[in-house]
Figure 1 (cartoon, helix red, strand yellow):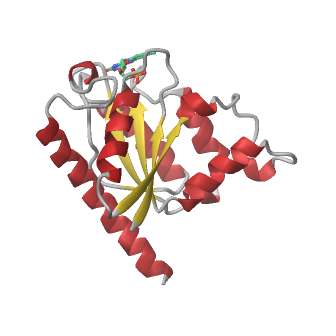
Figure 2 (cartoon, helix red, strand yellow):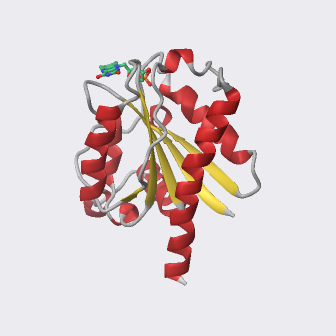
Length: 186
Ligand SMILES: Cc1cc2nc3c(=O)[nH]c(=O)nc-3n(C[C@H](O)[C@H](O)[C@H](O)COP(=O)(O)O)c2cc1C
């Protein structure tokens, strides 16, 4: 059994990428092969980055708890909206907060956009940042274009079968990396 964190990055009022995170959470927990922890950055509502956790003298308990949730995850799925061809400050905030926790962490990307291109630009921006922090980013991504037509507020997909296949393809990539990591760690 693999433990996966779904990191929902949008903190915007009326956000729609969170619907995709809800969908993934339900899809993943419907299988006995995985456990899932949905981390909602809107709920955590961290202040703007001042320093990395490892250099904080009195780290807030919620930051320590967040780091522990990422550390415990065998894989992380990042659900990120595309904002002006990049990812939101809320996500950069928590990538920068941690260091070793990201190292060689299998990470799968789910870029979400209002437009028709499915977050192609946010993917490129995220790749550079996650490469720098030494995460292990899966090839391919589950791109979600025109999100408002694809999922409802409860995360129910309009085209359920097609999205189930895409979720499974994403999970298969992540599972391969999580299994490889387990073997390397003995
Ligand atoms: C500040 C801002 C910038 C945006 N820039 C883009 C963009 O560059 N490309 C795009 O396809 N959609 C863009 N969008 C639309 C979002 O991708 C859309 O709101 C989508 O639902 C994901 O974001 P959300 O989870 O906050 O709703 C932008 C939205 C905001 C609020």
